[in-house]
Image 1 (cartoon, rainbow, N blue to C red):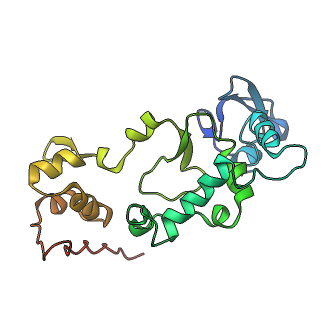
Image 2: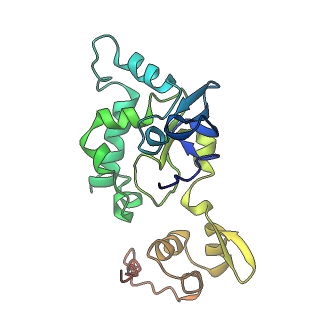
Image 3: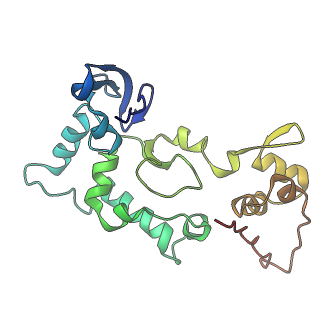
Length: 222
C-alpha cells in the first residue's frame, strides 16, 4: 500500500494544515482557516482543490451570487478585475501590455475561459485590496494570485527583486544604477534567462532612440 506524504504545515487555499486525526482510510487532516475557524478535510479533497476553506469561501461566493444564483455582473469589482487581467495579457493596444503580455505573462486556461472559475478560486475581493501575482513573472492562475493591499504589492514589484553577485545583494534598481544601465534593460535580461553575471556585465548597445533590441530568450533543451 502506498503511504501518502504528510500534509502537516502545507497550505491549501485558506487552509493551513495542522495535524492528522484518525487512522487508516477514515483519517482526516485538521486545518486552521484564515477566518479563524478550524476544519477537517481528507487528503484527496485538499490536494485536488475541492476543499479550500472551512466553508467561509463558499458562503462569501454565495452571498456575491445572491438568491438569483447569477454571477456578479459587469459592474462588480471581481468582473472588472477579470476583464482587466485578460486585457493586459492579450490586448496589444492595452497601455499595460508591455509589462504583462509583452513579457510573456498569460492567464490560465481555466480563468481565461470562465469568469465563474476565476470567482470560485479567488473569492470576493476584500475591501481595499486588488489582485496580485505572488510570482511577478508567473501567470494569472490559481495558486499564484491573491487579493493584496497596495503595500504588499509595492513590496512585490519586479524591480524589488534582490540579486546577489560577488557577495553583494542589491535590488534590480540598485544594480542597474550601479552598472550604468536602465532597470528595464536589466529586468529584460534576467527575464530572458541570462545569467546574473552576463546580465550585469554585458555591454548595453543602444541603436538609436527607442531601438534597443530586447535580449533573446535562452532556450533550454528538454
